[in-house]
Length: 487
Figure (cartoon, one colour):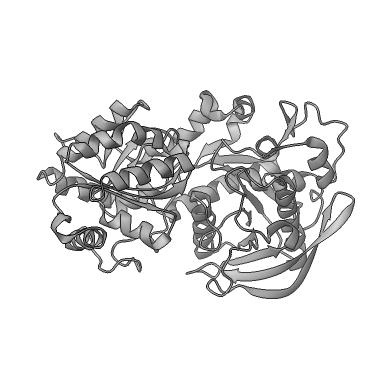
């Protein structure tokens, strides 16, 4: 399995893509499959911490009518022997950041074309006989076109199928067609109406959708939403064309890392049979954040670990957060960074309610573990959510999700039913502040309300969304892709 991605945890991470790009190969390796993971060597990667080593390999990469070069580095995925290779290029990757947030680097089309083509050239140098080329999001979608054109008859790829995984339809990689086709070494003459064109421009995501043998996305509900609603972001017609090859495969969690019984980021541990450690962690966090006289553990603590973007539903907090804080019934603990508007709003709330709105701007992996472990609830009020991972982490930690029923949130969190004691969290349907507030109030009603509170947390911690299950489902998809190719 040749995995090509722009992110892979822990080396380079912005969002859930990085976690999935690491968790799946780790599981496949344990299942006996051979993996080759190809990433850019970004300037921000800590080569000492992650034990990257330079190799003797320099890859020659065709780019249009010329060649460019990348020095190759190597590491292994933590807790695995799956190999990760990094492409070093001063022109493309020796700069701060991965994508150039918030607006993106102007040459992202060229950078990711280089990555997609270089992965094949590296596999050739290594003699890696490939069965599956697995591409993630628009950044590596061009690899599926390369598989069906330049490398179709190469002996290492002649029997390989291409699988394209969509993590987020909103980012599609639109660019000037003459420019990108030149980089790819393909003619412009037949661009109009081709598998590369959408609304007159080159669209990398469409390229992935059309050239892939099978298409997956990260939850069954999102697979339906992108076909039948505006969440398809203009790609609905192509998704309908490829409907027989579109499969929703729910993301899974690496429970080696995300498990309250042995989480290395926590000062104490706990399990479903003994939740005392969770209360200790909450008390520690509050004690560090405010004067002891204010650090009551009796108030429910609602956490959030998120990018601060419109997708994540921060607009609902703008409308309702102060109202909820003024009730005096709860605390918020929010860790995140993103749009300046949302950061400024949350910082204002933090200054106005210093013991009730605990705001930490930025991203820190260790603190994200601590927030999810210490909080009583985790809110994910997303406008749309292809899958979502934080709610899956929260379930394992007995932290009850409050979510909008969209995408993977709809597939993984079920409303608590007090009559029969089933369910794992609290949901709301409409993207409205009033609906969100009602869900929060329902959740807070059951806080320490026995026997419901104990039953709810036990239900949550018994949920099973392992990366192994997701990896097994992907292997089935890969087998279907190969059967289609042979047919």
